[in-house]
Length: 242
Image (cartoon, rainbow, N blue to C red; front, side, top):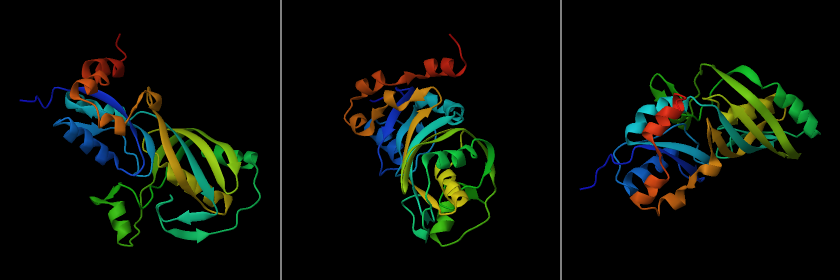
């Protein structure tokens, strides 16, 4: 008989685009017949990169990991807004893009650094009266959303070739990067939406140490264990113990 809880710890997954964070949880749970599997910070279906999965007894530590700061790399497109603030949504407005230099964009991006109140997008998992906003959005409804305090450590546009720009953004938990892009487009006056997002860092963990999901699917249970940070070691790390 397989011991369902025989794997306790953290594994870093490099999530591909085209699947939800919950899909990744289900793949690992079913592939290795594990009862307890959870993720620490949702990635949108079309976002890729670092996803932290906690297994077995380590699921009790998920709240500590969810609160970690994160870093993303991505691409935006100026001149178009969408209802979801990313490329998956319906285009709601198209506007001409003004002549802009990289320095102009970085001057605007710098205004988003520090504390700010962010309104979550309608297409999100945030709940209003127990109902996820994305379910209301699919019905064509838009409701008032309560702004949330967030912190952006760094928002830098790395290069720009109109209408696309590549950026890096480091932030606190709970930040909707597509909302940052949308709000910057509004500030510039031509609109913008997110076209690519890749999470590279979550707390002390980096995507370079993560295992691609397609590789995980081919691992044996013993091979999986070799890639897992044991729950005890994870707890010591979180408590800064030697």
